[in-house]
Length: 80
Image (cartoon, rainbow, N blue to C red; front, side, top):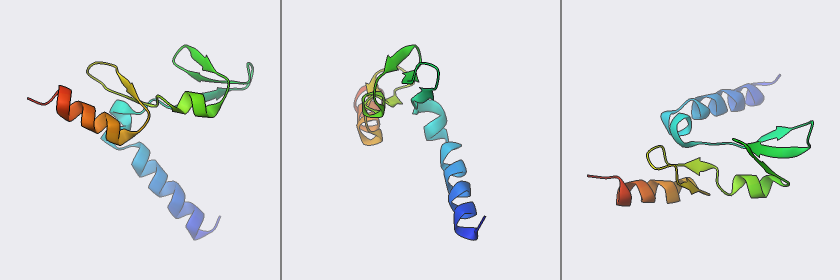
């Protein structure tokens, strides 16, 4: 492997291990047996459908398509 690939893997590993991703990120995984994307117990035909609700609020379990929407929701609904 060259240096750029190793650097990219290390950046992705740090990003996924951050608290933001551990608490709120709900990725869709591909199931090779059913040939569909699975998120929790729901199956989707395409990745775009599964990606629409990939960020989840840890307090009220509302789902959002992008992190800024989740961040806005948290400041409006859950800030004291």
